[in-house]
Image 1 (spheres, one colour):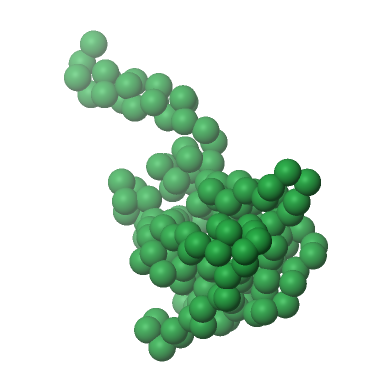
Image 2 (tube, one colour):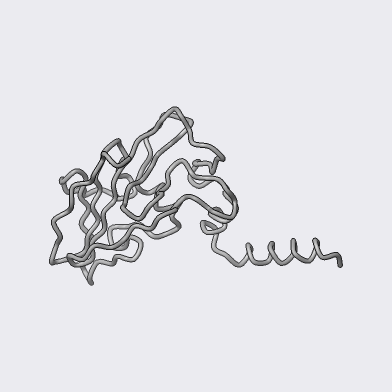
Length: 168
């Protein structure tokens, strides 16, 4: 077998053993209709802030969510740094949701789990959108410009910080 064929076969076998959403991140395949493009979209350019707290302790939202380095593209929803700022740069003007962002991130989002956060037995996570409690499915939380979304387990509950929108 030629070396190229062997490398290709090994890569294919590795991709087949990785869960579906993680394959998308590695291969840059669309997630929930959101493509991984080689440039930023111009029809919609907004920012939202995601803050996560575990019993009062701040948890980091990682940098480079939605930017598969090996592929060289970026999803319309992504992070550049670990400050919780979500950049939405899309070629289409549409409403995006927190559920879509978590799918791109390839982590769980429900009333009981969000990335590494878990509610205690018989409890739910608390979701705040611009300071107001969100009681519906958290996957439906809209991502609008300068939206602040807080997800927390507790008690104790943290006092969310005010995002610095000027650094964008």
